[in-house]
Length: 307
Image 1: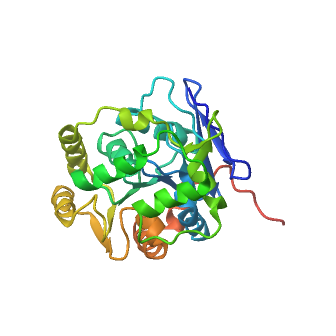
Image 2 (image 1 turned 90 degrees about the horizontal axis):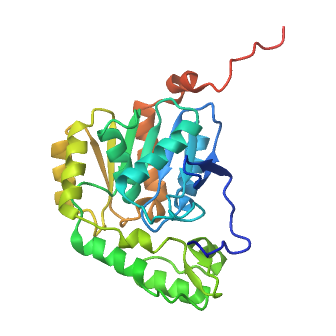
Image 3 (image 1 turned 90 degrees about the vertical axis):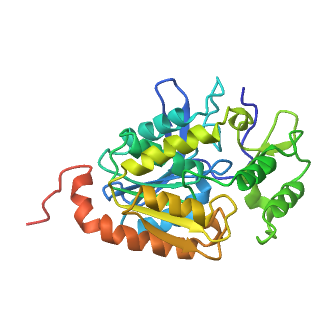
């Protein structure tokens, strides 16, 4: 049962979608909903806020960007049954798409969100117009995955202060700049019923069974089935996706484009949003140009002008 509440002053979601089981997904949107839809899926342990800069960039370029908190993350509901499997994540994506105007969306997924996007397209559950995978391929490096899990499972007893939260993040990402104003960290934690700060995600998200070999097989089959325009973006310093993993993916999906962002780690968009943004917009301009895609997503008939 979820007992944690959002810190006062942190951003409330601007969008809510209700699944058939009554659980809600929370999100934000940028741009005109009549424009081509781009759905942004964050990684495990992140929230929709990881895409804020990218969402604004896409909106300024003429797209309609939607980001949502994965189940058990951020402001989205926790699963009562602790069900955080791949199929449930894809089902949530389908729910958001159905409520966002249909059409053939562009999917942009980082890490766990990228795996969700890859399965959704590769298994025929979502008919997308293009796919951007951010530091996610079928084979992930066990040491990098273990480091993420160690970070996410630390301090189950909670934190006394945002200063402690900042220290934990700095130890995981020593190359990052420690913020002077800690209020922004409020998006990463919640206040629990005992008054302590705890991470925003449901701990059961990490307790779900993991079979990396089965996961590799499933994602490999999905990658081999891709026919739509596909871009893979890797963080050059990532310890989760190696160059060998990239080359395996490019053998499976031979038409995919590839960009290696040298000065970024696993969280590519957060580390170098400028480089990632340019790569994403260049790819979309060639494959899902705004002027070509806009008529298919008109929310209402065009009205004739005066006279």
